[in-house]
Image (tube, rainbow, N blue to C red; front, side, top):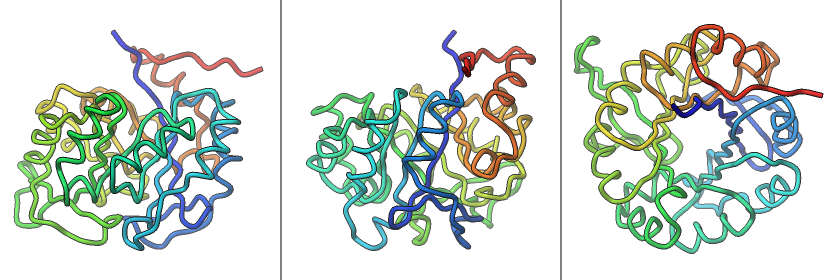
Length: 261
């Protein structure tokens, strides 16, 4: 059995890490490379950088930050935001990043997923999905709607249908960003995780809502996620990564141990 992963998320806006609630009310959380180096030492399994305004503002993603991070950390990291073409994938991977996350451009041009997977391998292609529950569906049997432009623009695309199609096109991993839960620290949308995880064979990463170790445990067990993305819980020193991993291990979840010198 593969170990479950704890992935620290660094949402970046104009070169600074920020964190908000439900994709709004952003506040500063620090320098991205400094935080990346810190989490590398503290036991994160991976890092994910998301330039959260690049697509909405039609900017290129943060290649300089990625290059500096590659010099400082020794764990895999993913970069997303503003990715529009296969050349953008290539540019990000050349910085030393291991994977590239794509959201808006994948919905606007689904063939980008296939082209990138054929050029660089499915393991490099992370489909990042920003989704909200549809208010016209029942709480016990919800459906989720995909959003683009950093969660600002709704689409008519059903999240479950999109995940299945994207896997057929070559997506190798799914990052499920629950806009409803983002930044609330009240727990992941576990039903969302389980619904997508049951529909695809590629790994699913739970994102949005972690406020305590028990939330992460629920996503990795009930939600059937292969990894949990965390942000506020560590950015603001509420819980250490080692503490989270010890909590999970004590409850039978296989995680990579933390060795801090």
